[in-house]
Amino acid sequence: MRLGVEAAVVDGTLVRGDVEVVDGLVSAYGLEGPNGSGIAAPGFVDLQVNGFAGVDLMGADADGYRRAGEALLEQARNMFNPADDGDEFQRHYYDAMQQSPAVVLAHAEAVKRLATPR
Image (cartoon, rainbow, N blue to C red; front, side, top):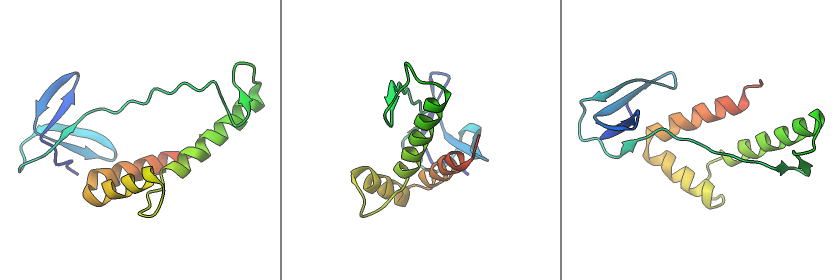
């Protein structure tokens, strides 16, 4: 599937052309295509959590880490719930899904990964 972008950031360089994604992975970039828009860029999440769900991670045992991890995962699952009548994030997410197949595919991949037990 093509993202329909004008360019992509690859190894810190802006590369003109569309991006193709196969099975959730970038398979090609710099592809010619009709009037792409936007720029595809890698997404990074930098997360620091000192505690969650009543667990102070600085002094937690294995059970505490398990409880905090399960609570964080549940919150992430709830967050990735687009709705046209939900909270602000859910509404924006829903709108983005209506406008871009790439967002739909990224959502499907995120939900799949959140549902997969480790």
